Structure formats: structure tokens, C-alpha cells
Length: 335
Image (cartoon, rainbow, N blue to C red):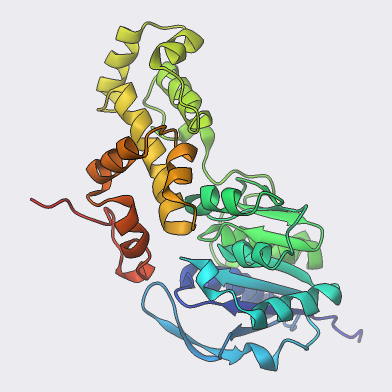
């Protein structure tokens, strides 16, 4: 009987990692082994110190100390991180990742794990993805990496996944590449994962974002223009000219389908971008303001407080609380 060639995986988790995304990645490999009656895939889970590691939903998993594994040969090593990944970057982690990189190991990230690979300098000149909530921060911090809005990305021996349910598709694609369609399809069926989303699938389906199928084309085209011009906002009159309708008609459509004026909606999505940069980077507030289309920092701070209930400097501190303690809206305005 031919010897089974085993694919060896290591997941490195950081405090407040996303448990659902991590187990969604592991479970297809478990199913593949079970269904084929062979240990095609083996995995272990590590963290910096080892022992219990708290996930973002308040649950913990047991982990091995990274020091016990950093010299172990592996086919694939992935970092699974969530909120404030940069807080968990250590020389020990960087050294371990570089050791595996030099051995030819495939390295990857789940959710915000790509931040830690990029911080180690392991994604320069590569394509990668992160959860859409963190894309602006990633793009600002790591311009040497080409950021993709796809669910998961394979770029040679660098891989990444946006997390969530996409981790299922990511793992099933790895099974497909290692063991073929039959086993990947069997694992998907066993886990009731009805349709495997292929490489190249966008995180958010553009035709359905952000207002589903109900909004007219003019509204969607106006929003698309706004989203492409956050740093240097277009005058609303210019948006109307480009999509071919009057200012009054655009106002009427936004009132019906968005419940905001075009100007207010535009301001709010720029502030949403600003909040990501405030809470997920160390950029100076003046740089955040400019990157979000506000020429005046005073105007930026006032608008930020109006939208989120606290000034950006306070949000930089309070907005970094562990994710399991957060809720949306993250802050309530004082009555």
C-alpha cells in the first residue's frame, strides 16, 4: 500500500482571534481525513506563549508554545488574528515566520493575519487580502503589498483569507489543490457547504452593495463614484454630471432609497474610512483627516464626534478594546 504523503499545517493564533474563522478553516481538513479514511492532513495550533488563548467571542482554545514548533518542518503556516493585530507582533513571531519562509514553507494569514506577515516584511511585492473592515488600514501601512478585495488569495507560497465563512472556501481550495476535486467536493458536501466560491470571488458582491437590488442604477453609480473618491471628494454637482441626472433628482433618489442626502452619505462613508484609520493605525490625525477627504482638522474632529459620539483621539484609545466587548454602534451619544 503506498505511503500517505501528509500535508502538515500549523495555525498560529493571537489573543482575540476569530474562533469561527479559524475552526472553519480546520474543519474541512478533518472531514477530508474522515471521509477518505486516511490522515492526509495534520495540524496543530500554536500561540506565542502556549496554553489557553482567548478568542474574540470569549471562548478559549489550548495552544502549543510557538517556541516548540518554530523549527518543525511544515508545509503551510498560517497566522489567524483579528482586532489590533500589530499589538501581537513580536521578534519571536517574526523570527519563526522567517525561519519557515527560508525553508520554503507556504505562509498565510486568516482575517487580519496578513498584517503580521506584512509587518515581518514577508508580503513585499505579493498580493494579499484581509477582512474588508481592515483594508484601509492595511493599504496605508503596507504599500509594498498589493491589496486584494477577494475572499482569499494564492500568490505562490503566500496565501491569505479574509476570514469568516470564506475560511471554508479557502480550506476546500487547498484540499482541491492537494487531493483533487473528489475529496474537496466530498468534504464540502459533508459540511453542508453547498457552493464553493472559487478564487477571484469578491468579498462583497458589487451588484448587491450597498443597497441590494432595490436601489436604482443612478444611486449605485453615484455611491460607486463616492467610494472611489474618498481622499479627494468630488462635488455633488460633478457626480450628477458624470451619472447624467440633475442634482434635484439625485437628492430625491437618495431621500427615498438611502434616507440621507448625497452630501451626508458621502461625508459618512469618508468618516467610516477615517474610523478604520483612527482605530487600526498610528497615523497622525492630520494624515487621517486628509486621507478621508477633510482639508480642515477642526472640521474633521467635529464631524467625527457628531457621527461616532466621541472625538478621534479618544476613539483611538477606546476603539481598541478587545472585540468581544464591542457592539455596533460602538459608542452611544450622550443624551
